[in-house]
Amino acid sequence: MTLTEIFLTGFSLSLDAVTIAIAAGAIHRVTHRQAVKIAFFFGAFQLFMPLIGWAFGFGFKTYLDAYGNIIGFALLAGIGLNMLRETFKKETSADRDHERHLAETKILAMMAVATSIDALVVGITFNFVTVNVPLAVSIIGIVTFVLSLGAVYVGTKFKNAAGNHIEAIGALILIALAFKILFGW
Image (cartoon, rainbow, N blue to C red; front, side, top):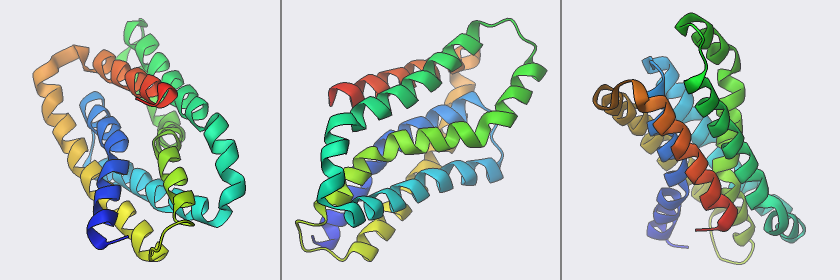
C-alpha cells in the first residue's frame, strides 16, 4: 500500500466515528478535555483494531464475516434507542446528566468498538498486501483522532442551530449507522 492509499483508508475508516463525534458534540456540553477523550477513544480503537485483525489473520475473518455487522448493529442501535428513550423520558436534567456521567466511558467504548469493526477487517487484509503495518495503523489512528476531534466541535456548533431536538437527531443518526452496518450499505 502506498502512503496515499493508507491515508485514504484512514479517512474512510474514520467516517462512522466522525459522524458519532458530531452527534456527541451536539448532544452534550463538551469540554475540551471531553472532546479529546472522545477523539482519543475513536482514534485508539481505529489504531488497535486493524492491528488485532492483522495479528489474527485468516481464522478471525470467518467470524467477522458472519457476525461483525450484527455486533456493530446491536451496539449502535442499542445506544441510539436508549438515547431516543431518554429524549422522551420525563427526568430532570440533573438526573440525566448524572446518568450520562456514570455511563460515558462505557458508552464511548461501545461506540468505538462498533465503529471500528470495519478497521478490524481491514487489518485482516493487511495479510494479503505489502504494507508497513505499524505505519498504517498509526496513520489510521491519527487521522481518526484528528477528524473526530474536529467533528466534536462541529457538533457543538450544530447544537446551537438545532436547539432541543438535537438528542433525538443524534439518536436517529446512531440508529441509521446501525442499519448501515447491518446491511452493509
